[in-house]
Image (cartoon, rainbow, N blue to C red; front, side, top):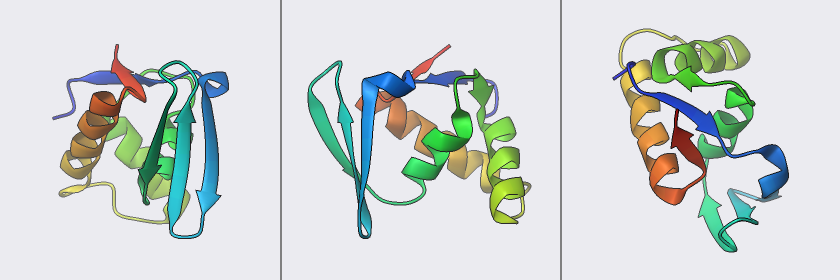
Length: 93
């Protein structure tokens, strides 16, 4: 779960536009637009340019949103990271 490390796409590669409940993410590299919901935009923002794993990212999100970072949180974040990797918005490092 926490052993895979990921890095987000460079900030200048993505255009992120909130659209009410949805967020449009245009990836300039692939010319694809992804429509996502929370917590995907928050995960990308919390990742920043650093390489991180699900456990570290769960802790960052917990601190930012006053949530619990233990329990199922790292597994849930790991699932979201895998989804982001499938979309090409993060890459395994």
